[in-house]
Image 1 (cartoon, rainbow, N blue to C red):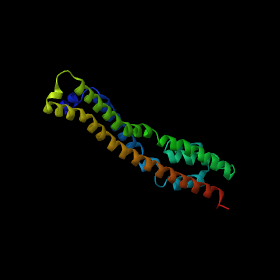
Image 2 (image 1 turned 30 degrees about the horizontal axis):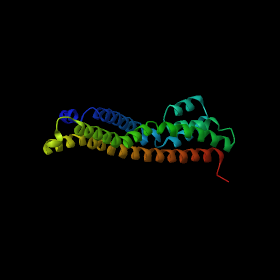
Image 3 (image 1 turned 120 degrees about the vertical axis):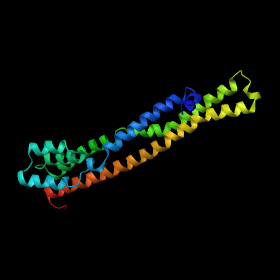
Image 4 (image 1 turned 45 degrees about the horizontal axis):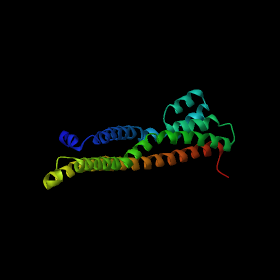
Length: 201
């Protein structure tokens, strides 16, 4: 492996850096975007039970805000439980937008790595080809040496694709997960509004 890195030349170090960053982002997002942490099961029911028992208390709001993104959305709604339905929904929507923004954190970086890794690999290959054909060693007169030089130059392209494919799969997976969680948060928040303000007219 070290021979391949050494043979591919200096452009591959950018790809190695991109691969390390991509792995770190994938691990971080996989840990953060677990459904049990974003939209915990039974949180709405327990929140409604606490609300019916003691109303909106500072303790309940503090617990919800520190619980999960869904908890922060529910807390925004409960904080405006005495306001009109429209005001309560606006507060929930604002909290929901902030929660969605937090869930999408680092996804742009991961998508960027997935998009540019093949280009970085191609750049490395072009640099390698320029060095092969521009060298004064006479490699062009030796087909075997020329073929070896081209295969070495192509290591960059291969490595770029090895980084891009898993990064793109992870990006698409996390994007779909965020969309699913946001929809679930919206549905739970709507149920809270219906419980506190009656059925929709």
